[in-house]
Image (cartoon, rainbow, N blue to C red; front, side, top):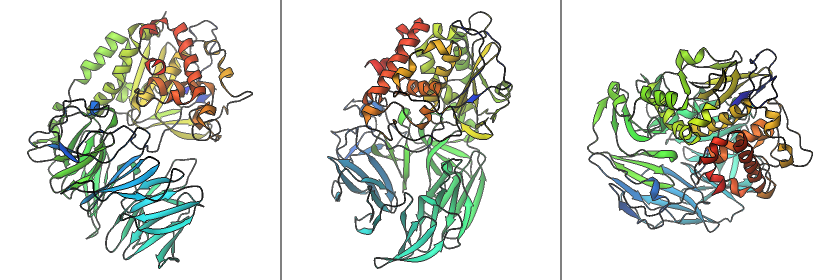
Length: 607
């Protein structure tokens, strides 16, 4: 997601000058963080609880992605949860014996409570607000917000508190027999429609990510308001008034407490007896959303996109589904008895875990289909791309780029599977363009955490693209969620580094607002004007603030968002100015890389 801009001496299409690092400007691609709601259409014809041990019919666009879900000796059931279209929101939580589903239809919000023992359509409550409110769901209840007010409801849709909307981080959580109200750095107790000061937090301006409530205590996961980053995440124990640093991506609640699942260790804290356990993490894969039932961790496995359990004591795993869940992944809600509840593509599913077979962790690699060496060999021999990992990759890293070596086989294979379809779409002739004359072609370095130093600031990177000597390099942070988009983004940078950039897009500024100038700085925070977050669709010239950094980043952001996404994910047609930029990028690329005329990489733009 970053490119390192080098001094070029040639004015012909291909630059053959040796790259010099001294005094080079470092230009970096955006750091993507945050969460987005699933917006895919659900099956409009589904029943309240239809059993689908092996779905084979394409009942709708949604069903295209779930065909073939199965388990070993159990079954998968689908719960119909509401009338959605692709522009509606859809959120789920599991609380007690109920799954709660918040959705919007016809500009109204609805909260549906599903009794997992007897699912039905009863219990749908309409929330009294129109489209000018945003609405979110948590384990506590529902939060409504517009420009004027913030309103809090419990899960029975009883209004708890209404306040003027003056601060984004305002939140309410239960505490013992009352509620805590967070406003800035001050906690209040809500009693009989009034608030009374309770405690001032040690550090200012916190926001609640999530919370765990028991009859006697409340534990909060908090983030500070460091808008420049990096963000800091903490667990706050209300009773003890103490903080602990956590890894926000690994933090999870379960029925009796919370747990952290780090690559090296797993830490579990039971809130009922205040005991902590720590285990060495022997699981070799990459854990997505997860849940702990007191014995095993249930998780969506991001190495091959299935659902599994992991026993940290006995070091065994079990596979609950054979289906690979594709681009959507799985949102794990929790476990009740022997049933695991998860959300896939906007729809609720439950897996009966009966009959799952456990295997030792050491034998896990047999589950992944394919072989890393074979796949690397195909990429190298067919497409002239060299894949480097671990110490071999580290030898090529620039001095202002710091990368953690990565050697985990399952995650590397998963990454290769994510980017190989895009390599195939670009084709051999395209990648041969990086091996002209004495040039030795494209190298893809798969690394762990990647950090770039620029103007004295250290910035986390999802990817980096640079040219040095006779080689072109793309660094991919293997832990980044958007691998396909990152690859396409960096490949766009590589195309420009493989050409005379000033002549590659000579008319680019014509597609920006009149007189517009890029920030040309990563230290300077831009605003949302002309972006999808700050303008109407017809006035959107840039995807986000990061696109306004410089022209190369702008082009790479446009490119990744119509090439590195599926048709359903592509929103380029909603923004006329961005679509014009995309069409110009296509026109120029086809002039310099005519081999792509037969490729389908532009199908999202043309369709």
